[in-house]
Image (spheres, rainbow, N blue to C red):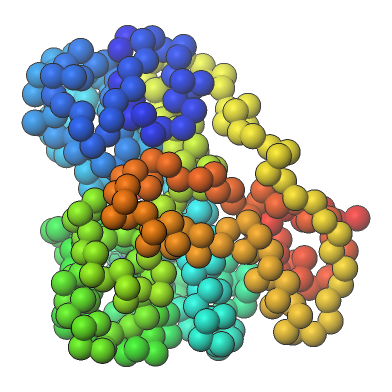
Length: 378
Ligand SMILES: NC(=O)C1=CN([C@@H]2O[C@H](COP(=O)(O)OP(=O)(O)OC[C@H]3O[C@@H](n4cnc5c(N)ncnc54)[C@H](O)[C@@H]3O)[C@@H](O)[C@H]2O)C=CC1
Ligand SMILES: O=C(O)C(=O)[C@H](O)COP(=O)(O)O
C-alpha cells in the first residue's frame, strides 16, 4: 500500500509505517502525477483535493485530512468515485480556544481593560467555538453564542446576529461555506463591519474568507473599524500585507497549532485507516508525545484579592502560550521567509494541560483547572 502524506503531519511515520510504503510530499506543490500510485492520501488544509489532483490516480481508496476544516476537499467528487474520506473534527479545538484566551488577555492588558467587563460574541458554536466558550466560562466572562444551524436542536441559549455585533469582543468559529441557507463567505462584509466600532474586538481564527479583508483595510485606512486579531487571512498564503500593521495581533494561521492539536489530527486519521483496513488500532498518541520536558511543576498558595487572582491567571496562561510570540514571528518573518515557511517551522507549543500545578484547594486553582491546566490537589 502506498501512503502519501503531507510532510507537515506530525508523527506520520510513527502512526502509518505499519500500513506500507510512506511517501512524504510538500502540501502546496503536490501534483497529480506525483501521487498517481497512491492508495492513501493524507493532507493538510493547503492541498486542494479534487478531480485535478486525483485524475491520474485510479487506485486511491482513502483520503484523510488532519484538519478540522474541509473547505479544501471536494467531498462530492470523492463520494462519486467511492473514495473513503475522513477529517479530524475537534482535533485542535482546545488549541484554538487557548489562542483566543491568550489574545483576549493580551488586548485587555494593552487597553488596561478588565476582561470580566467584556461580553464575548461567539459565531459558530461547534468544537472550536465551544472550546472558547468553556474557557470563558472558566474565567466567569459572559458570552453569547450565534449559530443558526444549531439553535433549534441545541439546549444552549443562542442570540441573533445583531446581538453579536453589539458584543465587546467577537470571535469567529465557522466553517468556510459558499452556499446553503447560512453561507459564511464574507459573513463579515461591509454591512456587518460598518456596525463595529474601534472599541470592539474582532477575532478571526477560522477561515480568512469569512471577513472581507479589503473592506477591513479600507475601514482601517479611514481610521475606523474594530481592534483586530487575525490568525487567518483571505487568499493565504498571499495575504493582504497592508492589513497587518492595523492588527493588535496578527499570526500565520497557527491558532490550532499546539503539538497536541496537530498530533490528535494524525491519530484520528490513523484510527480511520485502521477501521477501513480492518486493523486493530494498537498505537496511541500518548506513546509518541514528549511529556516531562515541557511540564512545569510549581507550588500554588491561596490568593486573596481579585486582582492577584487575575494576575495569577495571566501569568499561567502566558507561561504556556503567549500569542505575542507568534505575532512577533509573523511581523518579522512574513516578508523574509513567507507565510507557509513560518507555519512549517512553527516552534513547539503545548496546551494548558501540559502545565502541572501542584495546588491547594483555592479559587485560583479551580479556575485554572476549568481553563484546562493540570492541577494536582493534595
Ligand atoms: N485557525 C486555525 O488554526 C483553525 C481554524 N479552524 C476553522 O474553524 C472552523 C470551525 O471549526 P469547528 O468549530 O471545529 O467546526 P464545527 O463544525 O465543530 O463547528 C462549526 C459551527 O459553525 C456553525 N455554523 C455554520 N455556518 C454558520 C453561520 N453562517 N453562522 C453561524 N454559525 C454557523 C455550525 O453550525 C457549527 O456548529 C473550521 O471549519 C476551520 O475552517 C479550525 C481549527 C483550527
Ligand atoms: O484544522 C483546521 O481546520 C486548521 O485550520 C488547521 O490548523 C490548519 O492547519 P494546516 O492543515 O494548514 O497545517
